[in-house]
Length: 386
View (cartoon, helix red, strand yellow):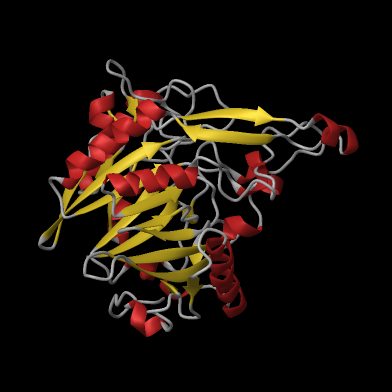
C-alpha cells in the first residue's frame, strides 16, 4: 500500500496558483492521500472563547476531494472552535464529497473509534487523537467532541541557574495520561483485528517558536507514546500541530512521522493577514506572523509511505515550499536540499543510522544495509509534478 501523507490543510477559498506554479500535483500517484484538516468547515456554530478561533466554508470539502484527498484527521486543537455544531457541519460536508474522516464523535467511543477504508484489496484502519487539547474540547461519555490523548506536565526550575540567567524558561516535563494511553492502545488493537494496515494521526508536540532549543524539537512524552502505540499494533504514526517538519523514526514494525508540517494554509475567518500583522498603534490582537509564520512554517514536504512487504515501512520525502500566502509550490533547489538535510539531522538525534538521500529516500544504515538500494526504498511510480 502506497500512502501520500501531507500535514495541516486549511481550505478557505484562497486563489490558487496556476498548475505549473503549484505543488498540488504531488498528491497524484499513490493509493490514498491523507491529511490533517486544521479547521472546521462551517458557517454556523458558536465561536469559542480563545485567541485564535478559525473556520472555513463547507465548500472547502469539495476542493479537497478535487485534489484527491481521501481521508482526513479531525482531532485537532481548532476542531471545536465553533462547537459541536461546527464539527457536525464539517462531517456532513466531508461525507457529501466522499472524504473519510476520524477523530470527532457524539461521544468518546465514537470519536476514538477507527475509520476503516478500503484501499485496493486491503483494509486500512485510521484513528485520530489529540494531545493539543483545548479545555472542554474532548469527547466524553455524554458530550460530543474530539478523541483525547491528554498529557500531564510539570515545570522544573533550577534556582541557582535562574539567579545567574534571569528569564530562562523552566524545563517542562511531560508524560501521556495513562488512562488515555490505554484507551488508545485498546482501540488500536481492535482496529488491528479488522484491518491490514493501522494508521494513527496524532495532534501533538510544540510549534517551533515556543520550545527552547535545549528542550526540543520533541516534547518528552512524544517518543515513549509513539512507541507504545506502535507496540499496540500501529503501522504508521502521523504527527501534526508544530507547523514545521520534525524527525522521522523507524521503530519495530512501524514508522513515526513526528510532524508533517503544513501543506495548504489558506487565510480564512479567524486567520487573516490583517489580524496577524501587529498594529503599531495598538497591542497586536494575535502576534503570530512575527513569531510563528517564519522560516520553518514555509518549509515542508509530501511524505510517500509504503507499507507492506518483508522489509517494513518505506519512506520518501518530496520537499515543498509554501509561498507568502501559505500555498504549496515546488521548492528552489537549495531549499529542497536544506529541507532534506534538516530532517536527516533531526532524525539522527533519535537514531544515528537514519539517512536521507538527495532524492528524498529515507533509510537506516546498518551492517546489512549500507546502501540505499538495499533498504528497499518505496517505489511510488511516476509522480505528476507541476
